[in-house]
Length: 441
Image 1 (cartoon, rainbow, N blue to C red):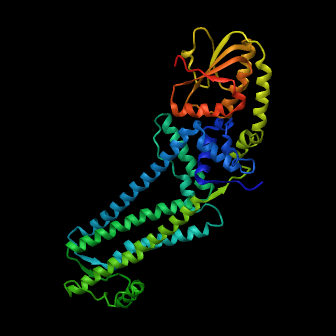
Image 2 (image 1 turned 90 degrees about the horizontal axis):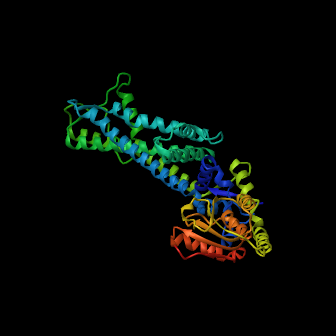
Image 3 (image 1 turned 60 degrees about the vertical axis):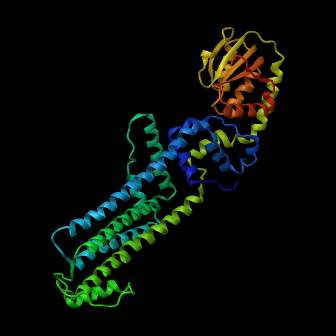
């Protein structure tokens, strides 16, 4: 059997279903014949993907998945704006006072120095953890609590799906890439704020630059300037360490441009390059598919209730047809009605015995034994938004074997869903005797 692979989105959705709605996996699901050719036993992943995408019982989890994605992007955007504002606030706190003399080495350390150290720490952590697991980013992502308020059932569903998002990122070794994208985005926003703030202060204010430190002498400061300026080849090697307050104004203007270029070249540019690289790598990984291991609990459960039975669908249909033919000749008495899965007992006619809600073949067989089947007439109320999956169609096949006449009524009459049901019933030979009741609707 070939290896089975699922996309990240399907891995995440399946993990959420397994954690929050495990009973949904145990419920039978009917795959249309035109799709079953591509969802055979040899392509179990395609079978699972179709089940995840088209099972109406999972619609709320799919909606929660989209909401979590939007929520995560919104949170990152909010934090990016906060980092941008923080960069502006930092520069304003330094340059907005009466102080108009700026020490260049101190500015370099507080801007590109800290940023360079953090970039190196990230780079070392990223590659050192490549052979050992998820790394610092993955560890931090796993420790971050998901920021969802605990009000109501819907929010609890969002929190559960969000928690599975973090777990799936860690499981598929995407956590450190995701963490890298977030951190580089935030630091890039921070540096953009610093650059813009310094630029506008230099544009509308008058500042003097000096090169002064407690420990370094003049020659060492010149060496520091040449080291920093080595990558910025477009600047001439002018000695800026000799600048004095009240000196040549052109030299101080040159120093301002040099400082802005240094922050951009050694601060913002490396962050943007790193962000672009990790973003592209993460995008490529997310567009690929990941192994759906046969030892995963979700695989074992899904295989038990769907994959192992997918090869006997035609046999089940044939047996149901034979069962119906053998039972159809029996003369039934009495008229009964029941609802499929959802309660609609208020619609039960006065001349029919209401059997309540039936949601499985075994339950129908038990009810048939208790209420003297076969019957003369059976009316089945079908909620139109219910999925015509394998389990529901099997109940209809079973009831055809317990009555002489079987009719169904779709409630409410929503044409889109009704057409899906009619199509599935008409294309199923074992339900040839099932008629739709249209009067009284």
